[in-house]
Length: 263
View 1 (cartoon, rainbow, N blue to C red):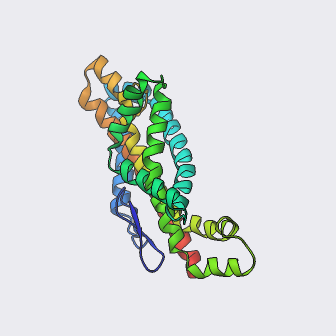
View 2: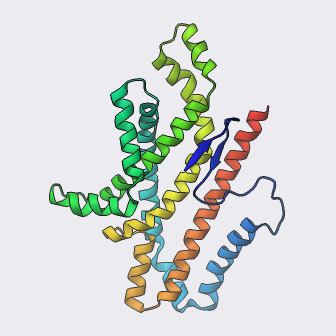
View 3: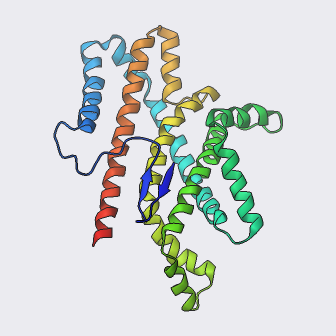
């Protein structure tokens, strides 16, 4: 999902297209896409209230559910990612090996399969509610990717920082928590923001577990009215607006970190 080059800059290799800092044109691709989507989302219900306005009234609770699942999953995956990242650089062989196996296994299994496994396969052993299954599956899946981001971020910090901390009498653990990790957080914020956007899009997969997210609410409306084209047009526009909006936030965040690094 992300990699570190020699200049301690994380390069995106997956996810949404983050707006370029140098792109100042009024008619940039991001502006055309974002404001074009907003225009369509407003214009369609006005000029064709049947069925577009009915669709817009039907889906707000699905948007809320989508955010709830995404925010819960990203919060838990951050905690898991930090532990995995530290485990990946641990000098304790068994911890390093276990976290590496976890990363390799989880990244090799599609999120959709993990959703099915936790909800249906594990359901024979323990009954996990749909929303809980969705959050667990997304946390486990994205925890592996975020763990790799933290590992790369930690390794991007000059080794002299750790050596200086040890020379001042700090233990390796104290140096990691008090000196290395605070600097790492600044480095990994942009790619973690990118993971949040990817998770927001992947949250559409939880509709298969009967979670009333944005996509499932759209499917319910379409199955009742048979307005499939109109319904999924609105759903696509909402997802597009959300992902473009957050991509802009990630771009601004990345620019601020870049500017601070130059001071």
